[in-house]
Length: 420
Image 1 (tube, rainbow, N blue to C red):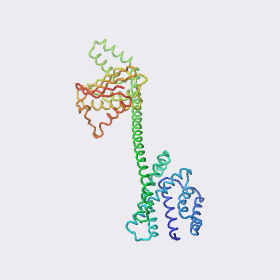
Image 2 (cartoon, helix red, strand yellow; image 1 turned 30 degrees about the vertical axis):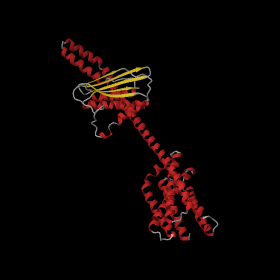
Image 3 (cartoon, helix red, strand yellow; image 1 turned 30 degrees about the horizontal axis):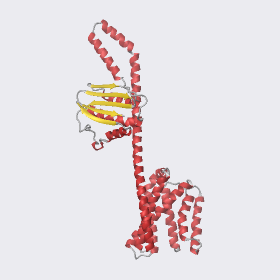
Image 4 (cartoon, helix red, strand yellow; image 1 turned 180 degrees about the vertical axis):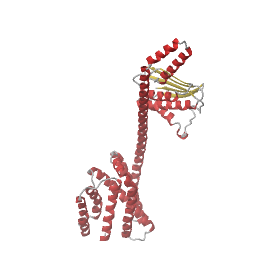
C-alpha cells in the first residue's frame, strides 16, 4: 500500500474499533493521556512494513487487539472476547461491501475498491453506532454475562458469515483456483453443520427463556396474591377487633330490645350482626396459595345476594406439588370460576371438595355456569385469541406429576376435577 492508503486504513480501522468497542459493547475509555501511546504502534509499524521488516497482514491483524486493550477500561478477558467478535464482524462487512462494488464496477482498480470499501464500512458502523449507543450499558451487561458456549455460538455464526462473504468475493473476482474451490466446499459444509448446531442451541435458549418468563410471571402472581391476601386479612383483623370490642354493647342493646318484646327488631339486629361476621369470614383450605385465590373470589362476589360457597376438606401439610405449580393450576381454575360466575344471573354457587388418600390428592371445583363451548366455558375476554393458555398450562402441570384433569358441564355447573 502507498502512504495515502495506509493513512486511510489507519483512520478508518481505528474509527471502526472505537465505534464498536465504545458505542456497541459499552467499554469506557481509559483516563489520562497514556492511552494515546498505543498510536506509536502505527507510527513505528507503518514505516517498518514499508521497509519490509514487518509482515503487512500480521501488522494489520494485530492493530485492533492493541487498540482495544490499550485504549479502553475493563478486564483483559472481556476485551479479548469483544475484539475477536469485532475483528470478524469488521472483516465480514468489508468483504460484503467489496463484493457489491466488484459486482457492479469490476473494471475499477483493486486499490480504489479497497479505499471505497474502507470509507463505506465506516459509514455502516457509524449508523449502527448511532442507533445502538443508547443501549450500550445494557449490551455490556447482557453480553458479558452470557455463558461461554453462547459466546462461541455468536463467534461461529460471524465466522460462517465472514467465510461465505469471502468465498463469494473470490468467485466474483475470479481468483479461486480448483484447490481453493475444493477447500471452500469442505469448509462451507463444516460451517453449515456448525450453523445447524447453533440453530438448535438458539432454539433451546428460546425455550429456556420462555420457561423462565413463565416462572417469573408465576412468581409475580404468587407475590401479588400474597400481598392482596395479607392486606385483606389485616383489614378483616381490624374489623374483627372492633367487633369484639363492641360485643358487650351489642348484647346490651339486644337485652333492651328483648325486654321491650320486639322480636322482629331482635331478628333484624341479629341478622345484621350475622352479615358482619360473614363479611369478615376467611376461608382456610390448608394451603396458603389456594387460600389467596379463593378468598379473593369470595370477597369479589360477596356483594351478590344469591352467591353461596362451600369448602369441604383440607390439604395436607406436605403436598406432592410445588408452590409455583399450585399457583398455575388452582390460580387458573379459580380465575375461570370467577369469570363464569360473573356471567351468571340469579343463583351463583361455588364449591371446592378436597380429598387426600395415601399419596394422592383429589380436588373437585364446581361453579354455576351460564353456557359452555365444547368441554370449556366460552370466554368473554377481549383477547379471546389468547384464551386456552390457562387450561393448557393447567394440563401441563397435572401431567408433570403423572396426574389427570377433567372439565365437565353438569346440570348448569362447570366442574373441574384434578387428581395428582
